[in-house]
Image (cartoon, rainbow, N blue to C red; front, top):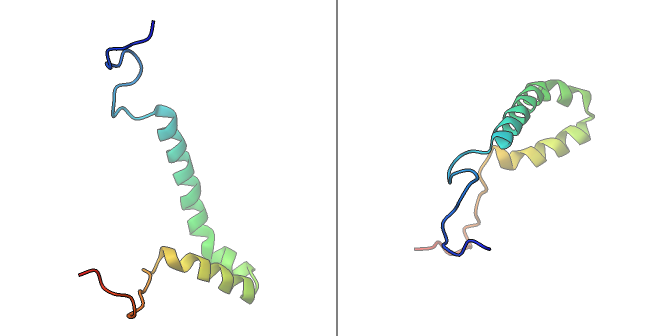
Length: 75
């Protein structure tokens, strides 16, 4: 018979972090930090054209987008 009360029985309580997700995030964070430290060396290995393409792709993560002045400001 299905639970028709709307109350939760068993399982994790609301707000309890998933252990596997926390471990996976930690592992990915470690890998990313190692790769970020290697970016200058990796850039030196690329040809000028490839280096510029990569830098253009990375720019949105560093600099905010500039909005056109032709667009109305939401006042």
